[in-house]
Length: 150
Image 1: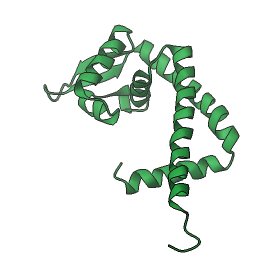
Image 2 (image 1 turned 135 degrees about the vertical axis):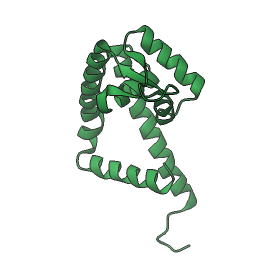
Image 3 (image 1 turned 120 degrees about the vertical axis):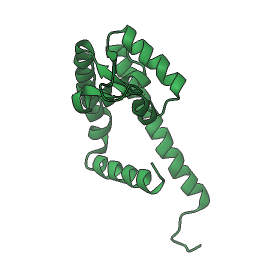
């Protein structure tokens, strides 16, 4: 080890700060989203993915994988979203084995408003405190995701 390399405790501390900063920020963001829209984190994630997808729909199996939910966990979240008239299940016209999750009109309205609120909250709790470092942080996280198989 050279004199310029960080010590083990320092490296572990840096990583701890990344995790703690992420958790504190995510908790604040999700708390405000829950307060404004009554959405749990998994529900919000699914609505965001759908509002950003072509035709505001996605195959349910793909959506579950992207949202990192088990099949059973995803079914519970989807059932809640259907009951709240935020999504509907749509059979694929091309493949009987495929069912799409699609935003309802109400779901599209809620998803767009929640996305706007998310951006506003992130501007306040991430971009304002970090300034120009916010872009560098995003690029660093993109690099970690890529090199670590995400």
